[in-house]
Length: 132
Image (cartoon, rainbow, N blue to C red; front, side, top):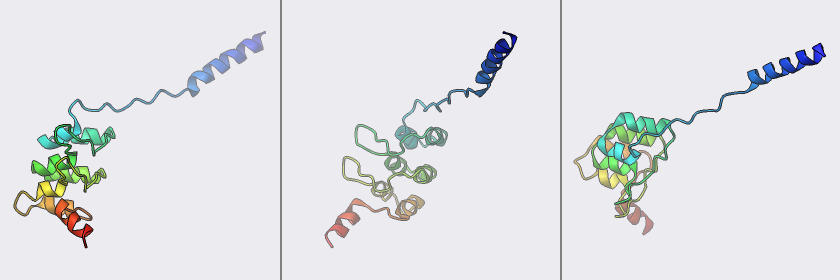
């Protein structure tokens, strides 16, 4: 009887030692990723990337992705972060515009260079290539 009791206690202790705690999910920030990119909020964008938020998430009114928003609002540091998180550089919004179209509204800038490398195109360039 004593051996049975010792065995039961040992098994109970071992079972307690073997169980692993449930992994905790990284909470997503309350601000949508596209809104954080539009505001240039690098901290919230990084939180979304760490939480594995889909970087190509779009806003409802115009279908702009995070990359569209960052390019349109002139945030090259955010553009670089979103690109590093493998955003679709040629995403098309509801107006048929791509992130590079948004960046080219400004005079020559570093965002345009970031978005062109390696495969970024404007909507007009893609149309021209399609008709060649």
